[in-house]
Image 1 (cartoon, rainbow, N blue to C red):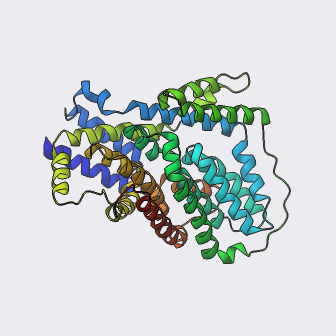
Image 2 (cartoon, rainbow, N blue to C red):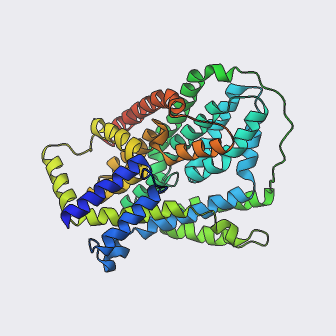
Image 3 (cartoon, rainbow, N blue to C red):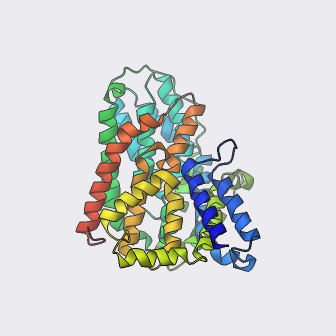
Length: 408
């Protein structure tokens, strides 16, 4: 059974790296679900142990945040913000700065995948109407969603998982990560502005203002709910319960059907998380990961230093993806010190800016832009992604070292 589990574990993460099964229309969530079901059916994970393998608080927290972000989207806020940004087309560099600043701030408090999903189409449409090349602005949005989300424990799925697994303080982590995250936003602007400087000099034309459905009352309600959530995060109440309480209050509405909000929950992402929990639990039961960690520790090769965690974050985030990578690391390496967890959250997130496949947010921007007729290629992303990632991770590494979070 050990060999079977090991082979299936390897095939799972090969599928995470490829993103699909060649010849079949099966994505990462589908791959993980199939393997998890096979492992449970084969007895690699006892049926009674499935509830222990899946970390439900993480799934509940993520689901609650998705409902909050869906309520924000239903108010028309994302569309209004994206359209307002596009109206600044007469000054392309200012437009890029606004895209990165607003995208980064929103991604810090409203899961980044949902933010870029909602903002990409109206941003594409507004820029195209003004004869501007949308690509540098979309790349700025993707980069900002990664760098900005690194600032908090609710900005992206992997940080949610790290915060829950390590019981990290929400505001304590924010104090630790805000500066390198802000530096990442500034670096993103500088790299995109320089690499795409020709596009940012392109002339623009006036276009009529787009009609956007925008409900100020609903925006106010959503804003109050977010403030309440942040206050609750400072209380002893578990974060997942806080998120569910806020989500439940937002479902109550005289005008917005609850089904509309629930339909916005990213079920495939939750399935991916749950399935990876099961797969990693099955692999852990073989004893191989524990032995591997002991061996690495004996040779002082654990990624507990900046010099080792940086390359590992870059490699794993841009092959199997930062979410599967973090799930795997937390499962096989127990008792990770808090400083290293902070480093893992920061570095695994910033590493997602390297290549187009580095984060789910990048792929969402590319896919949503393609629907609008804008093609973002692997090369388009890498031109600015390579320098911005190297520089931002260098700054983050120095910050972690100077702050005493990790050794060099």
